[in-house]
Amino acid sequence: MGARRRLVELLGEWRTGHLMVLLPLGLIVLISAVDISISPNIHLGPLLVVAPAITPSFAGTRLTVLVGVLALIAQAVIAVLHGGLFTANHQAQLLALTVVTGVIVGYTRLRERHDRELDRVRTVSDAVQRVLMRPLPDHAGPLRIATRYLAADDEAHVGGDLYAAVRTPHATRLLIGDVRGKGLAAVGDAAALLAAFRELAHRHEDPAALADALETSYRRHLAELTDSGQDVQENFVTALVLDLPDRRPTVRLTNCGHPPPLLLDRGRARPLPLRRTGPPLGMGALGPDERRTEEFDFPPGSTLLLHTDGATEARDADGTFYPLPDRAAALPADSPRALLDALRLDLLAHVGGRLLDDAALVAVTRLR
Image 1 (cartoon, rainbow, N blue to C red):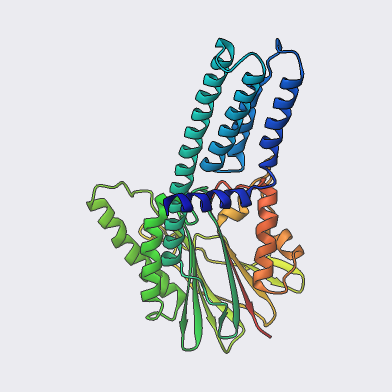
Image 2 (cartoon, rainbow, N blue to C red):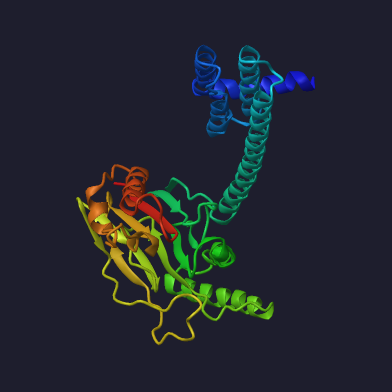
C-alpha cells in the first residue's frame, strides 16, 4: 500500500508539471546524445546536473529524485560507452552528480516543509479574520454592503484595521476603525474593540453615545494590558461610528479622528463635510472636544465609501499619494462589490502590488 501511495503521489506531481518536466528530460537526452557522439576526450556529462537543479522550480521532492536518478543513469551510460564505468574520471563525475542531486533534494524537502508551515499560518490567519471580522451581510434593510481588507503583512490576512455591522429593528450600525500600528501586533486591540461594539451597538442609538461607551470599554482593555506589564501609552484607535436608518435617507455619524467617508453620487465623489472631529478612542481624556453626532443626506442610489488611511496614504514609486476621491468617482459603481473589486486592483497597481499599511474598504449603497 505504501508503494502504491507513493506511485499515486508521483503521478500526481507528474500530471501537475508534465509539460515542464519535458525540459529536464529533454536536457538529459540532449546532453547524453551529444556527449556520446563527440570525442571521448570531451566530457559533457557534468552538465547533467542542470536537469535535477531546475526540477524543484515546478515539481516536488519525488519528481526531483526521479529526474536525478535518470541523470545518474544517463551518466553511467556515457561512462560505459566512453572508456568504462570504473575509470577514475567517470567515478568522480558520478559521485559529484550524486552529491549535488542529494543537496538539491534536501533543499526541495526543506522548501516543501516551509510551504506547509506557511499554509498553516495562512489558515490560522484566515480563521482569526473570520472570528474577529465576521463577513458583513450583503443586504441589511435597504442597504447593500461590500468589504475588502488588504493586509500589509504577507503572512497575514488580518491586521489593525477593522469593521463591523450590527442590525437593529430599524437601522444598521457600522463601525470602521484603524488601530495604531499594523499587522498581527494590533489584532488584540482590534478584537477588544469589535467585541465591545457588537455588545454596545444595541444599547445606544446615538452614535456619539455609542462612541463614548466604546471609549470606556477600550480604556478598560488598555488598563488590563498595563497591569500585565505591556506599554500601551501610545495605543489608540481612530474610528467612525455610523447609524443608517431604514426609513430615512440619511446617515448619522460620529468621527473619532478618522478619515471622513466619501459619498459617491451621480458620478462624483466628495468627502462628507464633517464639522466636528472628536479624539480617537483611547485618547478621550486628552481631547478637548466632545464627540458629536452629525447627520447628512444619503439619497437612494448613492454609495458611502468608508476607508482607512492605508488607502489614502498609499504612495507610488514617485511618492504620490493615491487620489482616492478621483479614482473612486471614475471607477464602475454598478454595485458595492464591483466598486471595491475595481478599487482594490487600482490601488494595488498604484503602489506596485504591495501596501505598506493595512487598508480596509467598506462600500454601502442605499437601494432606490
